[in-house]
Image (cartoon, rainbow, N blue to C red; front, side, top):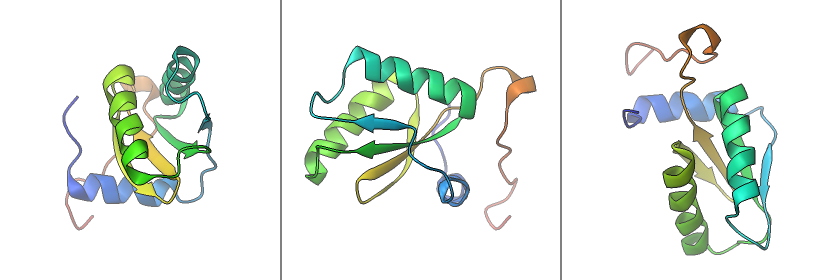
Length: 106
């Protein structure tokens, strides 16, 4: 997966604005059930909000985010407060829901 460009992240943050968190990270942190839930949610939606319930310190959230990105093969598009936005392009072109603008000002 190619890394997201700045305008693509901005586009995804705009798309995610009206979404509710689908996955919640609790006191156990990163677990296999969390990875499975993220994998299923990204397969279905491509764009997912994750709420950090227990981890309020930014450095701990960033460490968990790095772990999620690596294990689930996704990329964070934004972090606002205790909510992170993750994206992974659907592997099947027929099922893709998100189409990026072609230009940075698009």
